[in-house]
Length: 225
Image 1 (cartoon, rainbow, N blue to C red):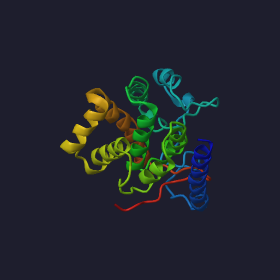
Image 2: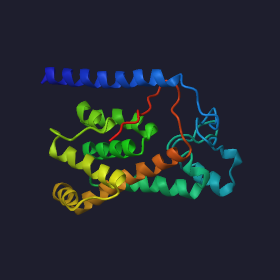
Image 3: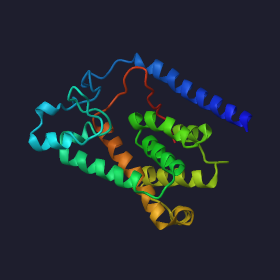
Image 4: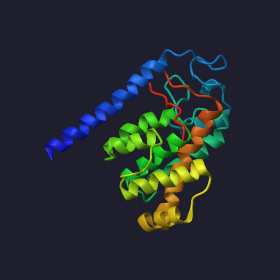
């Protein structure tokens, strides 16, 4: 048991170290000319002082707000319409905190959604959370590199296949949906859709504004299918 834990930790360390090497290589790349230097995106971060009264009230409820009054994090760009950011925050809490999926399945679903939208910000946070939830580093690597599901545990394979079909193929086939219901029940299958979509929506905002990670934080390599 102790040897197994040591091997698991060693594999996790190698996984994270490889990501750091990619980050190091990419951090020196020149940003596109249309990106803001602070947000590293096409629009600057919002500041509380520039919002109207309603916007400030919503701002005060959102994660990612800083003591200096700047909103960062996954809702930073959605908050250009504060009501949208508030709705996404509530969707996240309903999908994640009130859902029926266990931490293992939920974190894998989040990583799949992040990979399918190339959403580096939340991937970088949830990769470590996924490891703590018991995800095998090899499974995380399958998701990161869009690898085949040969030899992957049935439940993990189902979550990955479901997300790939929904977010990439734009069609979930009957067999995949039936397996999701078999493994997680109808409520669990719908909770998986909700979890994946709340992260995918933030990923779409990041795509639109071409968000880049700060120096030293890894970004996805484009992997052909």
